[in-house]
Length: 159
Image (cartoon, rainbow, N blue to C red):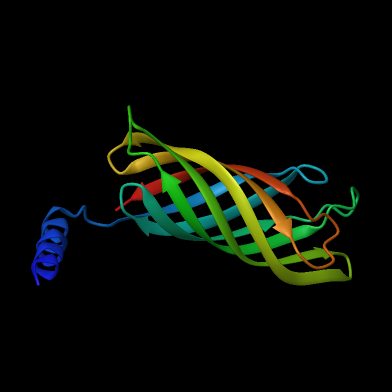
């Protein structure tokens, strides 16, 4: 019985001292460098505590038929492990999974994908931050380019 009371007291103390969840949204532009550099644009919306966060992200990379570089659309759910903000900068690593669609001309593949990466959120003023992000994707199925890489910069709004 003493263990139950102690556990209840610990849970209550954690509830009182818990950090409130925070959310943010990012609109971004960047490049997908595989097999050639093409524009990518998208958005992410997430929530989390100080160290652990979750986000949903959608991105669309344009096709380049001349270079035989397919378009790529991704919808990913990601887990972020992040540092507390230090000197206006918060670093993070991320891993996630979701769906993709790769298309080149009439050829198309839709399947599951995973990704790993990392980046930084840098405070600019108020709730506005610059977000820099790098990802490597692992596309399953018969993707023409199964390991595309992406880099983006975005405007991040914390709320």
